Amino acid sequence: MHKIVPCIWMNGNAEEAVELYTSLFEGSSVKQVVRYGESASKASGQPEGSVMTILFTLGELEYMALNGGPSIQCSPSVSFFVNCDTKEEVDRVFAALSEGGMVLMELGEYPFSQRFGWLNDKFGVSWQVNLASRQQKVTPFLMFSGDVGGKAEEAMEFYRSCFNGTENVYVEKWKADEFGTEGTIKMGAFKLEGQEFIVSDSAMDHKFGFTPGISFMVNCRDQAEIDHMWSILSVRGAEDHCGWLTDRYGVSWQIVPDRLGEMLSASEGDGAERIMKAIMGMKKLDLAELQVACSK
Image 1 (cartoon, one colour):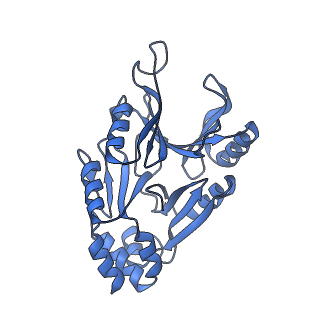
Image 2 (image 1 turned 135 degrees about the horizontal axis):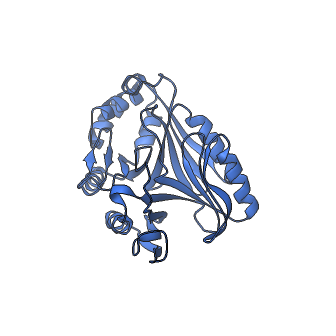
Image 3 (image 1 turned 90 degrees about the horizontal axis):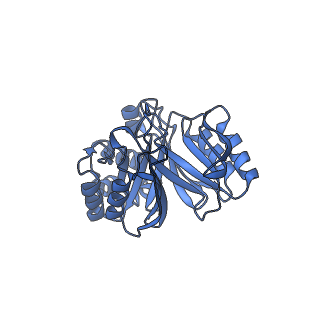
């Protein structure tokens, strides 16, 4: 189980999306499927027995797809940056992901890359596909614009203060003769718990911003860690329900016990239903209450 797992909000098509994504990257697989029980079905409006979440891998990292319904949409403010070893791989991945979607930057040569393209796929998920060999195949890319424009460096340092195993990998700032605001982050790569993330500031007047369409699930080992991560990430942000919160920059996080998936798998039927019902009544998750629901 990885410490931080990107979670993609879907509208009933998580299975189709995961089938596409895992077909594109070698070594990818589905690890766990959880279905809606009665309580979660009533709360979400999703059909009972339908797929709720799919935990899967892309390359070496874990991701989750959540069938949450049409109320929340993904945004290009969080995209997935794909590093490809060859031009042929770039073309193959871009073609597969762009089918039925919308191209944001045409596939081609740019001053910063010999082969690059940016798109929203048919599920609304944003991808940047680039020719570059890097250890991490797919990397979350957070673009700061609008009210949080110019705050990428501040956010990068804030996130590094919240987690262990952090380091700055690469930072490049906009120059005076470039399109961005001088001195803000053009591209910043850093690691949290050994996982790489990318941030960038955009001076463009985008009509979108961060949404819960892409959230980051933090797997915590005990209640003390749940309390700690909840308290620091929610400062000047907003607390939501079911372990969700929005931080000071508008980025969404889920703070959950790392054994939650195991508890749901081991408590199929009534047990899983009790756990989900308990979660629905919480803001910050209470591990002891979830364990009681699991053991009844």
